[in-house]
Length: 220
Ligand code: C5P
Image (cartoon, rainbow, N blue to C red; front, side, top):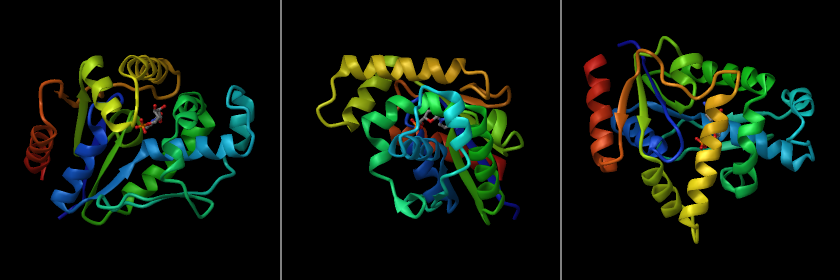
């Protein structure tokens, strides 16, 4: 069988990661978290004192860090220059700066190239989650899913994941990040014309997983 390529896009807090990992594990496919790659390059910029408000500084440093992603859905891994950064890339400082870094075309070109290489070498297939996978990275994907949910539902899910998070502040930060991701010039967060939109507001995670698994099986 030819490898099956699944693109899952959408804003934060829609259950993209949980859904993508579970679908990949259930169907024996590889998994790639592209948000983790953008977080990793942002972490490197912050750690190396690059001014993340300066697009020129970001552009000229974009080629420096070596980012390696694991593709096992049961244990997603990410390293920068050989260092495990799975923890630090989730910190608030990185989260607040990642939209600015990922808007820089040189950063996107670099990360997109990595993503295409990883997807191209997946033997059984891969589930790739992000913001621009169906529109830009893998426009020929066999299945494109666009997950949505109300801002309230998304903020509630995110603050459930973060210890001691304040619901209002989480919602504000989330809305701000989505607005930045949707309005940037280079491959913004957008639904591909041929993507299947799934509104997860009133669905359980299990229901969303089943829905996507069924969609993949229809394509196989
Ligand atoms: O998915 P996650 O919330 O970890 O993504 C972090 C950030 O990485 C997003 O807010 C966005 O700025 C950027 N991103 C992107 N393109 C992708 C995936 C993530 O620009 N394909």
